[in-house]
Image (cartoon, rainbow, N blue to C red; front, top):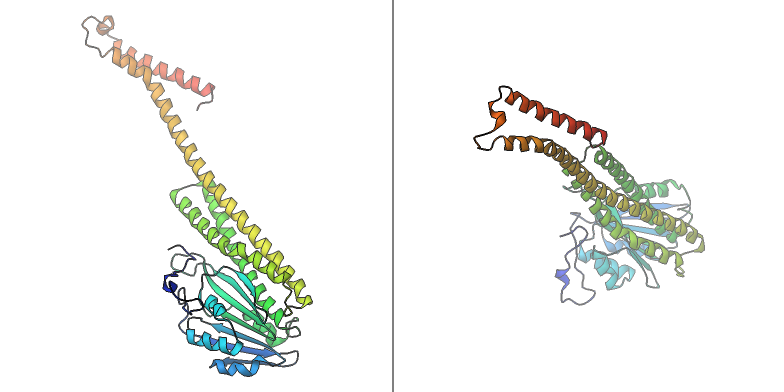
Length: 355
C-alpha cells in the first residue's frame, strides 16, 4: 500500500462519529502533559486521568494540554466529554489519513497538520504523523501520534518566559505550535536538497542504474511531501481569514508570517520536483548518448572491415583461374591493400570529425 494511505475498510458500514483508530499505532502508551500559565505563574505536570483537566477548562489562565499517543479511544471519549468536542472531531483525530485542514465549530477551532520525519523507517523513507490542534477559549489541546521533541523549544520558552508567548493568549500558543511544525519542514527540505545535489553530481559524472533508483526514491518522497504540503496553504489561509473571536487581531499578523513560510515550503517542493524530473530526463539522455557512442564505434569498425570482407570474399571464391593466385607476393600484397584501405578510411573519418 502506498505511503500515506491508511486502511479505511474497518469503518465500512459504521455510522458517522464511530471512533475507530485508522493508521499505525506509533506509541505503546498514551501520555498527557499539562502546562497552565499566565504572565506571572506557570504550572506544569503530567496528567493521569482526563478528569483532572476539568478544573483547568474555565480558568482565566491559558491551559495547554498535550497528548502523545491517540490510539486509546476511551481516553478520547473522556476528553470529548470534558471539553464538549463533537464526535466527528474525535473521529477525525483518530483517522490519521486526514489532509491538513481547519474547521471553525464556533466554540473552538480544529486544525490538522502533518509532521514529517526523515529516515524513520527501515526503508529510509520520509514518514509522517498527524498532529491535531484544538483551540478553545483559554485552552489549546494538541494531539500527536507519538512522543517527540518537536515542541520542546516551545515548552522551554514557556518555562523561562522568553518571547511573548507567556504574555499572549491561547491563540498565540496555537500559532507557536503551528510555526514549530512548519519550521521542521525546512530542515527536511534542506537535507533533501543536499541529497538531490549529490545525486545530480553522480548523474553528471558516473550515471548508473543505482542513480536512477535513488532519483526515483527521491521523487516518491517529493510526491509524498507535496500531498501534505499543498493543502497546508489553504489551511493557513483559512485560519488567517477566520473571523473567529478566538483569534485576536495581533495574532493575525503572525499567521500571515506562517502563510509566507507555507508558500516558501510549497515553492521549494515544486522546485525539487522539477529538478528530479529534469534529472530523469538527463539520465535517459545520457543512456541514449552512451548508446549512440557505442553504436558509432561499432559502425566505424564495421565500415572499416567492409572492404576487407569484400576482398576476402572475392579471393575466397572457388574459381580455378585467378591471376593473382600464382603470385609469390600475393598474400602480403593482400594485407598491404587491406591495411592501406583501413588507414585511408581512418584518416577520412578523422578529418570529418567522426572520431
